[in-house]
Length: 509
Image 1 (cartoon, rainbow, N blue to C red):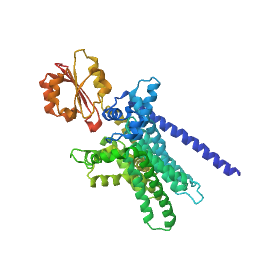
Image 2: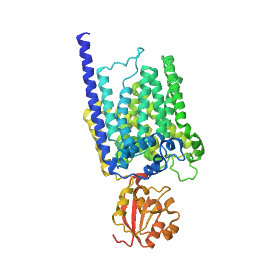
Image 3: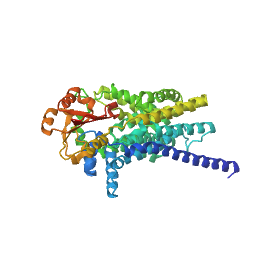
Image 4: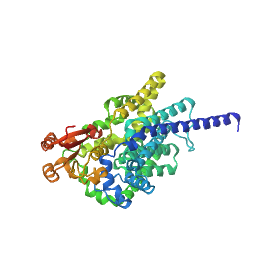
């Protein structure tokens, strides 16, 4: 080996080591930002309801029952395994136990987005199947954008908050990035196992959350477009597109195999996916607005605005260049397809259903920051610092999701033996997780039977979930019985409607 070649390879190894250490630092930053909310924050309604209905009943029940869309099967199974492990070790920390899988996949998303973006900017491979060489300037640019993207995945509030929620959203984000990364690698290098791995990752992502299905649908739409367009390399492109479509067909087979035990349940509840009652969250409503905001990395408009602006810049720049164009199409195309299909099909959505598009949004934001960096380095650095600052500010001012545990502590602190408790909530008796020993009565459907329950229970205490949705008339009815609100605990879920209210008979405090 010649001296120049030896020096070149040594330099690559040195750079690779620096990248690995840099990536480890990004994961550590992500862990630090997630650590506080992991166990210090109460479980909220959806986390408890999913655990009570599915997770607590064991793996056989989890993989064979789907009577409502709350069962994110892959994640529920992982939560059961984590909870069981904690229980056998004698560790009593249900919040951490249930959220640990989400945390691990959220940290994995940092690596996945870093890899996806780095692969997206490397450019097409060659006929030998070897990875393309990275010229100095282009190589530095791709690594810089990848590091920025990994940092954004570590700090953006949407990523942080979903990384400490016992639901399947962090798994969906991670699998979306991994599936796109693997597909890009398969297109670049053409190795058969990469096509198969892409199919497996798509299937596992859909198993963790059904809305992940829009990722391979977006992939398929882009591959069909590649086949349909003309060009000098049309034959080669068509061959790659056909292999990619074959991988997506394989993903569909894998997905059907995973969902086979619950296909009957899915068919039975198919009407639940239509907006039949008129009060479901509409595509073009508050949920759609927050789905747009989360593309900027936050559900607060002021914190999302810099990310959205940078994302628009990065998207425009990226779509002008062939190298990142494919990655942006593959990672984002599923989102408009989902919106169109749900709107035409008169279905409904929550903003978080669209979190599979977060890796693509982060790619666009990172490209926007890097383009400003190349134009004027101080401006690019300032925009990155602004993104970090607004993200940290969001997390500092944001209250808990829904402080159920804190409401229980207020009641338990002053409880006496002859006290009685009534809980007003939605459809699930989720407060059992924290106050089961108090034998509470429940008025569900937001107090639909409140008059009867007040007569039967004659409560000393009342805990109200979603008090803004209960209505003034029912709150006045509590006051008429001599109950007084002693605490209103703020919660941010349902876009500021996650408060929990605690009432006590005859209290003036």
